[in-house]
Image 1: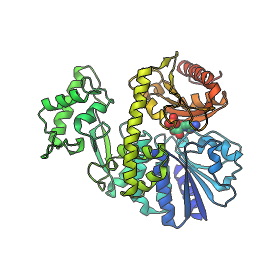
Image 2: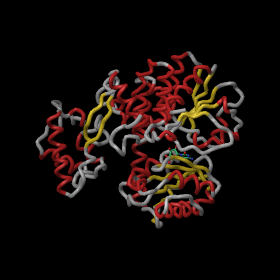
Image 3: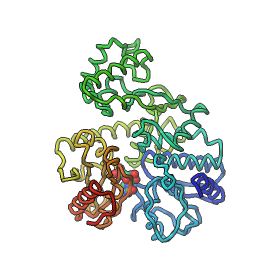
Image 4: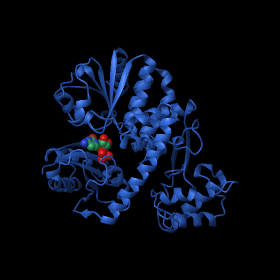
Length: 465
Ligand code: C5P
């Protein structure tokens, strides 16, 4: 069996199901994956309903129906929690997992479509969901933008600044059908919604001395180039709206600025995925900004609002999401500032901070990722937070960089091992992982994680602590 056979097998299983219960994750990839599959099932006439969970952990399993005869389809989760499915007494024939997380073996052999065993390391759950849905109904090509949003939301295009493997196939299919525009443009978040100088000042990949982190300096840099930055009414143009010649002059000046400071220019330009059917200046025009909208919905307990947006609602759901996005950005700014103000504690191979109950557990991972570029990028960051609904449980989020992953760091292995040894459970990826652990085990968990990391640097292999 190969990956295409797994995809075809999943589509057949779905076709044959009388009823489907989709259980999906609340992040951008999970919401996009749910919206793709839900719409494909509607089109195929298969009754379905969706449940969103923050993580597949014992408490969340209460929401997964038992003995109702429906096929339970786990999206963007499940591979790493097959033991929980088993404990919940789900039979192999009533489960299908479409995921991209590392598998943890269990006694029962559940059906899965997951690119990892086939070497497709950059195919998110929305990508898998799209491939299965497309097999179910070829008209689902109109859902390709959602697959791109899920992939980009899960950072699948970050390392290479482009989608690769099966995710690239999906992109090209959507492009051919006119649903996606692919451009090589500035590698900077916010090109569809932010004025050029703001966009540049917020970017840090690459960090451009004298521009990154400082909107005033960024503006005067651009003004010195004599490029028109405002439209006829005097409003700032967003980056996307600046005419090609202006962009070209800015990009070459930015490259010179990098060279002048002895920095690499290779990450200045990357691929950008735009959705031409969306309104100008809408965050939904651009895959990475669309993903932020979905993350804002999911992380603030409104994944169904995100799902409605994915299904085309540009009215009430979109307005609600706009409010959540503003709130989401404000809280993340606060979290980042809190981390930088308080400072992290540095261990030999890890830096960590406890943010208490100030921030929801669903966003501390985002803060960890953003803080890392402003702290020591050579040491993974671990953020601990207290769960509002259960003060005896703590959430841990870990993030590292591509470079550290290349040097042997594997955060998925760190959290799985350190949480299991300390009465918790966790999962994720080499570059980003999370866990729930007992509050009283926080200190032990942190030091165990540090020891495992030390061994990963020395000798990537099995760990004991
Ligand atoms: O929650 P956070 O953003 O830190 O999660 C990072 C990654 O780890 C995500 O892919 C998430 O699905 C995974 N994770 C997990 N099990 C947990 C917590 C997070 O698999 N208990």
